[in-house]
Length: 339
Image 1 (cartoon, rainbow, N blue to C red):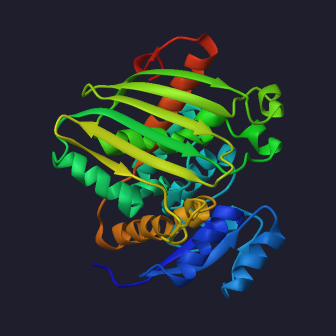
Image 2 (image 1 turned 180 degrees about the vertical axis):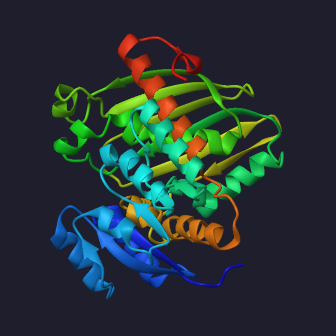
């Protein structure tokens, strides 16, 4: 194993970029935060200054050109991901990229081809795979503890909708929010979806509907191994970040409940109550963000392949596009129609 610290630059100093920068600077072994880039130079300088990093730039190309940068974490707007992936690969940088790779399958393939040709490591930020509870559920299913899986149910509900300006450029709920759940279906089942059916409505904010999207949806998927999966999403759960999973099989069931800030239960004459779920993804998946980036760094050190690669990023978008078409055309869509 190479024991030299990996110098990693973060491209994009928004909410998730700040999380990765902090983790690199304080929690990831074998790595060093070596640069920050953001089109808003002040944002890049703020993050770089917080962690005493000398390189802060408004142009990510300057970061890619730095010879001491070994790898990058791409945390920019979705529309820029594929372009930056190709540029980073051309410079021989290992790449960690937040989801989605892109919203267009052709652009995704061009980006993945560039990665393959360059021979660099590539990992997609599907952080939920690194949550200890979801990883345990996957292991129990994969080792046959519940028998052949028959039914899967995933609930994912945000505490509040994103700004309308974000909704308009996000690609829609299926490619922005449900995309994590599509990846979880593949991860938990070890199988591919063959058919997708989606229904949805704007029940939280009519403005989201007027922007051409839905904020509440249910997606059913038929998998190649016979499993039937259901995903339900809402952009607003007033009680917090609702993240639950259940896989039911011929010999049993595994379920993952919501995480809460503490485990107290209050019982009195009026009621039985406990803490609400963690507020949002930064709190709920804090340890998963560390674990996914640690794996990326470890793979660079030991030459192994990241467990969440280009195909995973591609297939989640394929399922998102299938759901989008299903909603538009009000019919089940074969995955083979999309890819």
